[in-house]
Image (cartoon, rainbow, N blue to C red; front, side, top):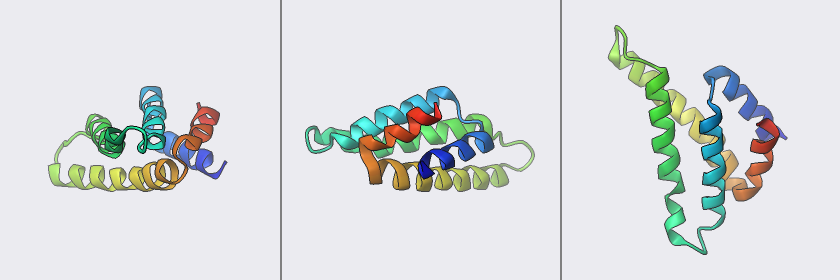
Length: 103
């Protein structure tokens, strides 16, 4: 439930879309089946790409492109730490509980 609370905080802070959250469900499945299908180890790169694209759409360059880039990198690191490392890597498919509860 701690993961769900943190996911809720991130959703409010960054206005994470439902589509993004549903993609996380796919990544949890992939992480849980790496032994069965080694290509599922790519879940982390899919997560990083999807997260980066989402942040690029939310945070426009505006007046200072360097500042926007630093903000995107900081937020991507925060999302990776909370969702990818503390959530998906640690709990694999069990992270779905937090996601479903949040959704």
